[in-house]
Length: 141
Image (cartoon, rainbow, N blue to C red):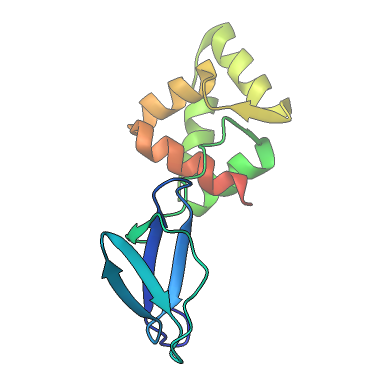
């Protein structure tokens, strides 16, 4: 509702299109079909397949699967996790730790499904939903 205007919402049962009418549009149901009239009585040219409905919510954007390392680090910083991640990576032992440090230091992007992300999220106790939130936040940075 913009500017306080009350809207009447109807959904086209054939196309799924959402139709919005200001509250001064007169709506009557004649024989199962809705008739829409302007405040001055003129019949509006609208599909006969409209039924009362609600405005559908916007589609949920997909969770990004890859973000740049800059985005990842900024998202972790904003979430208060960057120091903990850096310390966790620094403490990883052996050649797998060396490989993780090289990836963390020199990769240009990070994949949500990569082994390093799985390892770090497990070490930090992050849920899948929290990881999704981090990647979503990172993608807009």
